[in-house]
Length: 315
Length: 315
Image (spheres, rainbow over the protein chains, first blue to last red):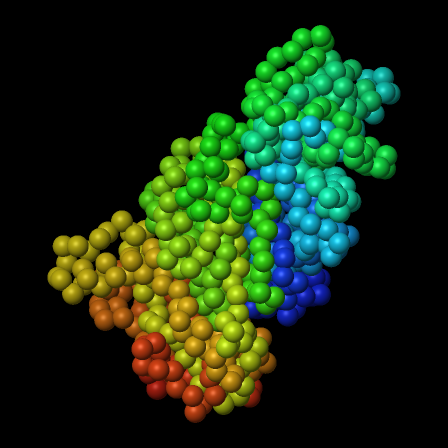
């Protein structure tokens, strides 16, 4: 056996899925209804060069899991396309991916390894529908629904800014250093809200997506899919402890980061106004869906149109 | 709507799968047993820079379909992760992919678009099991089985050599020019042997894989998976008309290309000795599976061990 086959054989033993990994395709027996999602992590695009392979692996899984969370799916299988330079410590990357996958109830069922000039990994996840749940979609928002987010906004973007600036703020006062560490962790390793997604799937009606390109952009997507508008309370957007001070230290506008920073990987969701998520999800109501089109932002006593702005891979 | 969303909306209309492409994941109702395969095409690794986006798209689909063919699966759904520089003519690539997918009975059900410094596309295909068929695996070869290939060997590798050399051989004598054109086409656009794979799936017992890294390497894989050896008749390996003359013009060894050239994307398969594939598949018997281990090559009156050699992404 040579390099590629030896690695595949090793991986197959590690994954405990020799029957799955041995053929040209993986053979799965699925329960009928599945959700499938695909996402890539590219060096220099989604994370800065030099990130440890273990961190890349966990991030790759997390951003994909966030998509399954948004649909109310239960993670089941993963397929990896790993395109990386020959000097990548493949086993470190794969071990970390397997460990994180196992913790999420996922089996690595197949994939493809190729040499490439720069690191890029694509993960395909297959999720199943919980027996008592339905799929959570984007197009189920109705005028009058309350809009929620499942965590704090802008922190991941601040973490990326911090990493780009090369600073750690470690020597700053303790609260600021703590906020900085949390922001970097938030950027490096998102926490997919699978439990929240599953809860949404058990509601009579709910709509959701995960915020990957910033609240503003993803809110516009949600509204467009459902044919509604929205009014957002900008003064009540949830931000982390010390976030404003951190933004000040970074020279960034906290409201701007919260609205358009991106990569929050928390759920933005809509529920009928009389339905309130349990406190354990730490969700915050941020506004209301309206019969019109467009998104209005109320902040600091002023009302303005919130533009469809955020991260765009094609701009 | 901005660049990325506009492209997704356009794609969704083109694909006629608005329900599938609109959410964080695609929701599929599958018939239970599915085969899933993942493969990438990377500029400079799988094809030379400058290839037209339409050709890249068709090649991406074809190499993935070849994996489904090897399993006896019927193509059903595709998921695309497209990581490309902003100047890629996305719609040309996507139109060509959709057209080729439609022709193969495939719906593009989801995906992910990202900007990246170099072109890399990963396609995940989901295939279903024909009602009257079983999955074709690698581990079903038994000693005494006859080994077959579903087409000619080495031609795709010659086509790549030809493209790398920058020559067209167009001004050479007509038969050589014809052989050259066929070889380049063979490299650029493999023909996945789906019908042959489905036929194998209807046999009582069959084993197969698709030759992607050269006959020698993939034969070793097949034998290893099944715990058998093989004896190959090197003098009877199927090569295309004019292949030897083309190799001479390229300064390449035809036997070497046929054995280790790679990217043939035809099926290597095993059947009980009394089963012969119908003539329409143009299959050629190349040897026999043995009870021992290792692969022996008989050629020009000599017998030698055929090493496990071919293309390896990790070497």
